[in-house]
Amino acid sequence: MPKITKPKINVSVPGNNDAKASDVGLGGKDESGLFKNITNDESAKVHRKSAVANLNTLEAEFTKTSVDYEALTKLIFENERSLGFVMKLEPKIDRTKYDEKYMSLKEEADKQNAIYVEILKLEKSFQKDFSAPTEFKKPEVLSFRGDSYSSHSQCYCRNYRSEEKTLAEYDASKKQYEEFAGQLVGYKNTATQTIFANMKTCIANGNNYALFASKENLTKEVVEYNTTNRAADPKKVIKRCEDYLVALSKIETDNSLKLEASTLVALTQAKATVTKIKVEAETYISSGLFQKYQEKLYVEKIAKVVLPKAGSKNATLEAGAITYVKGAEYTEYLIGRKDSPIASTFRAITATATPYVKKNEYGLPLYEYHELWVAFKGKDGKCYRCAVYASYTYKGGGTYATVPTWSGDAPEEMSCLNVLK
Image (cartoon, one colour):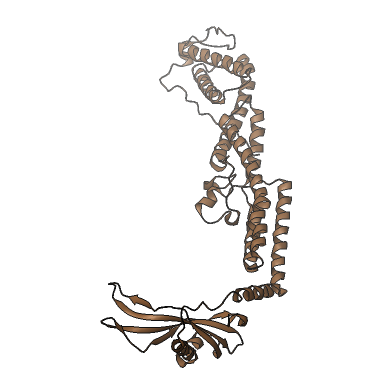
């Protein structure tokens, strides 16, 4: 608790032109009976009356169930000012009876006013540093406390402008505030109590969010993701687990969250679940099961690959297609792609019933072509199919070249059982 010092009050006194006690002389009578050795100075009389009225107000203030500390601070200041004038005008005055009533009240008022000053400082800090939202939000766990403003603005128990403030500091300040408020008479600030209520809601929201990340969202983002993706892509599962573990650690250590013991247990269990899934995905890869799964999928994939149905029969074109794929041009193409060279060909089919015509932007023909497919075996022992095109350049006048130009697409693996289908 900081040291509380009694506030200093600067009291102005009359100037050199004010009346002197010696100019008036003793002999006046004080109506309140609280002063002796007074003078007949009218100005002093006014200030004495003011001091007595202030004393009565001060006594009445401390009988209330709630003290107005703004008014109390002003009251002490004004009364000290009045007494200062009295002492200047009547330096021989006896104020013993007045002080018997006043000094104990002033001492208590000074003490409480000093506490009130500290309370105002704390209230200002609550408003600045702990402006808590009450809406329960569910920011993306995987991007919790990311670099974007939206991630920061979704903080639960701290203001975006003062992210360095921790809930430990809030707890300490709130405890100090309550201790101070307990020493005042009926003091209560509605705005501050609203902040405390918002913080209570906010802390509950923070725990609910941590539980959401540990249970509901964990099930969706990790458990179900693992079920859907591990067989085909365990590396994605491993990355998801690594990212989620980081997110859980951020939640666990975040200064803006005040997590209950049960919530921390849930986070620990969540991390154990994620770690287990990550290890299982890693084992799935290292054991060779993932490789076998990929091989199985690939076998199933190539088992579906067959040559298209023939659109027509053209022995000349089919022979030309086989010659093309076995030739230097296509062989060089395969080498450039790092595909297996051709060991032998099986057959070719003509997919087109009539040739396709390729036209330019003005609708004029450029060439016509036939589409053919060739099945072959590579030197790697696998079977493939590829599309081959026999193109005839347009010569004009409705005629095309009689000798085709050959080209082909990349090969696609197929099951050797399908080459004759």
